[in-house]
Length: 151
Image 1 (tube, rainbow, N blue to C red):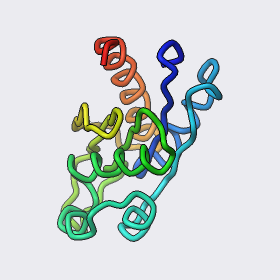
Image 2 (tube, helix red, strand yellow):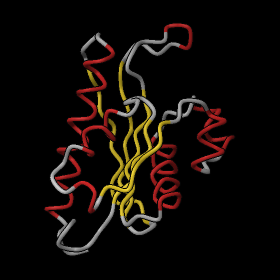
Image 3 (cartoon, rainbow, N blue to C red):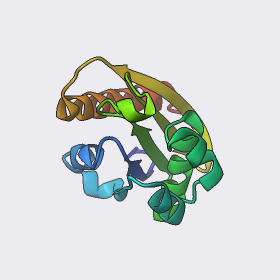
Image 4 (tube, rainbow, N blue to C red):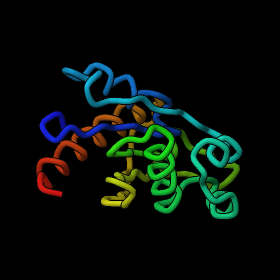
């Protein structure tokens, strides 16, 4: 990213700032990491990231489409080259029939969705789930930008 003078911003829900904290520790982070936002509610995702409220309501804000909208929204909000977003579950929510832990994340490059993926976790501890998602996204993003060095 530094060689190509590219910048990055992130939108988080389920990882609650873990992704931002990890990126802030990267070597020369100040030269590419512009910042991020953590939003939990539909209202805040709509207000700050511009997601479609009707789409959000139908899936409790957890879908490939919502992750893509969040990534597009954060890239626009911070005026960065890249946007990354994640939304999902770090703990079970039996009252809405969420018994498996999963999340969707998306990478956006210059206003275009480049990668959307679902990740699942079997750990029961919410903190470790957040760490697992964060590590997975960082590795996936690193692999993606190296594999697609010429955009």
